Image (cartoon, rainbow, N blue to C red):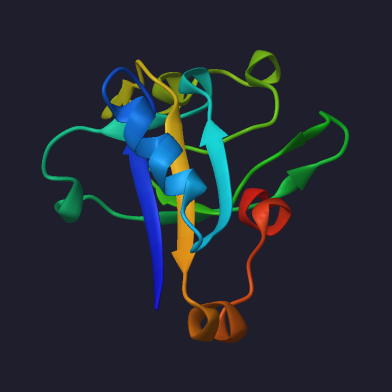
Amino acid sequence: LSFLVVVPAWGAGIPFCNDLEQSPHMRASTRVQAADHAFCDGAQHTKPLTMVGASSPSANTTQHSTMTRQAAVTSSSSQRPPPTSRDPDLRPSSWDTAVILLQNDAGALKWPVDTPRLEA
């Protein structure tokens, strides 16, 4: 089994995130800074998806592969405009987001992922 949990990392969610990260099944985890991502509000299931995933060595940024409406997570938000300036349907995130991979041994054998790979 493999579960990728994506939850807001704020307020009452912090203990929940910490509990998941302490689980014996946690294989990888990362936090996406609030300034580096946005959310699509309402009817997101009807909006076209775009696969984003490229590197820009000249700008020293790396985009994580994400399925969003033109939004990408970058290693330095000061080098790119915020995601909401690129798409008017996106709402800025107010909080960091935790991304936690939980797997049993069979899941980890079939889909090996560690934190550096999750962040790539």
